[in-house]
Image (cartoon, rainbow, N blue to C red; front, side, top):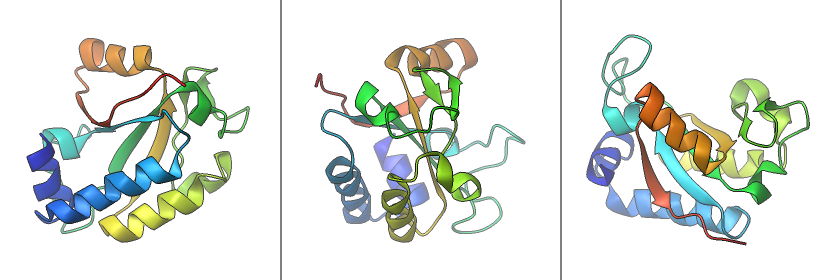
Length: 146
């Protein structure tokens, strides 16, 4: 799966993908896990079944899921779908819901040369979405107990 992510999202440049992951690890609270979800994992958009970047290079976004209690503290109180378990996405359209994380997100967008969205969730929700709703993910940084 990581090879597919590298090919689709980083033009096959493994060094750029590793740099992306390293910046995530360095910019997030210690112990935060990171998973990529969506069409970069499946090469199929949920909206219409079209492949990743069907409208041209850089048109598909990267859905970055952040796992852990500490990272959820960065979201505003009203920015949760499920309080303390699952946040709304931090994206260009809603930068103010987790303003301290937005500079990292924007830096990653430049590196990836495409939109990047952050969403924080509990492991339970990530697992349930995979199993119950067939929304697979790829863990790129393992969550650690803090």
